[in-house]
Length: 140
Image (spheres, rainbow, N blue to C red):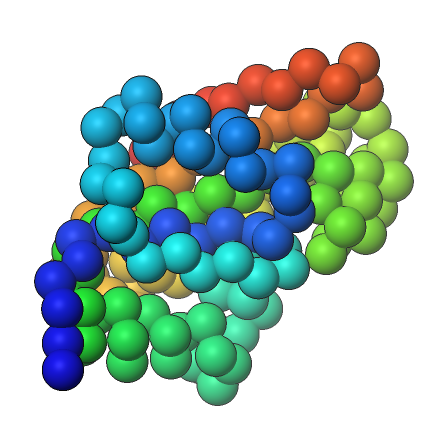
């Protein structure tokens, strides 16, 4: 049995992302029903494993595309990500952390577009500031 779900969201499982992602999806009018792929580091596996041996590429191809017929993917990356070792492993300051994760997001976009050229890919970067503010940037 297959169903039609037009969007998949690939995100880190970090609970701090729940509200910013929900607000973004609501603000943009994206469908409430979407495939949600939530794993440590979110799009990180797309970069670490471009040959498709890990489950993220298989989840996209076997379930999201084949079974659910998705056409759109939203990649969500965030700063201060524990799967990368936190802010300290990414330069230690907010600016370096931001640019590191922005670069990672671009690499993940490229991996998705190379593997699945038929999909529309968009992405956002959620930036956690040291003063506990949250900034959201639409990247593509």
